[in-house]
Image (cartoon, rainbow, N blue to C red; front, side):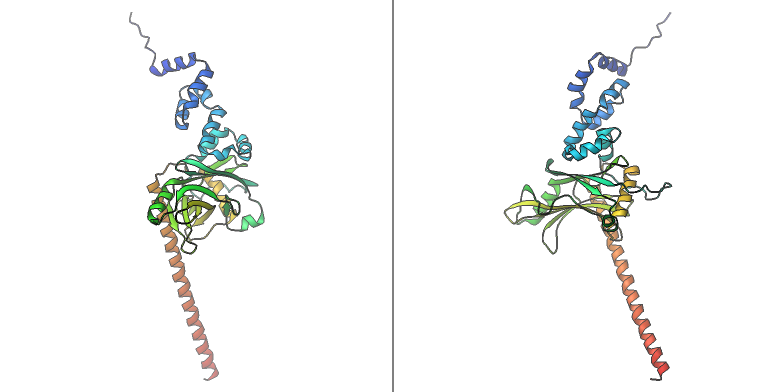
Length: 331
């Protein structure tokens, strides 16, 4: 009689070896050394590994190493209320949020009482600035005014080690490549989050009036109709160090219009719920930004032509009316 018992599979053998190890050894000497992608993959090996790989302290370590702003007490308090904790935050915030549809069969949820903004700036991959801010979203002034969030306090500056040089193109390119930003928005009510900044810059330029340097980061929010723009404004003198003077976030549409707080929060909530989280290379991000900029330019030109035609028609109508009254008056 032949032996029909099949040899144990490699996966079964590996699982048995892991089960023979004490969970503290696996946790301390294996899992703490893994990155997020590897840890998530390891969680699918077995029920034991799933239980070990989803422990909160592992994901807290990964999140705070990636985004130091999440060490802030405000951020820790909010994350503790979200099911899945730091693992859910990582899933929502990495990588950046990208396109989604504005149309949904469900009505938009009411705006939350607040949004939590967690901002991290990196220079050559090292964090140089972290800030968490609460945004009160139900104030009348916020809902009716253009959405504008500042990460820095008035007159606050962030130093860098980059030197201003006379070769503008060279150091603009270096600044574009060296400076990166993460801007996570957390909805404490909806228990969701999203990263609304491209990690890499899409453009570095001189402001035509102030001559300050602006570094832009953009994420497409609603299928080529809305984008979220993070702008870092840098100052300094030739031979001195570059310092960051402003860090702000706005949302704009292809008409060139800056969205209001009410519109922006609604789009953020929809994006957190059904947006695509996808890693996009720097070249593709720049192409999307350039395409969006072209759409804005075309929209402005159409609007200008329409206003010019309307003014011409108004002038012509006024002239005809004047001639008509002159005719009636017998002149």
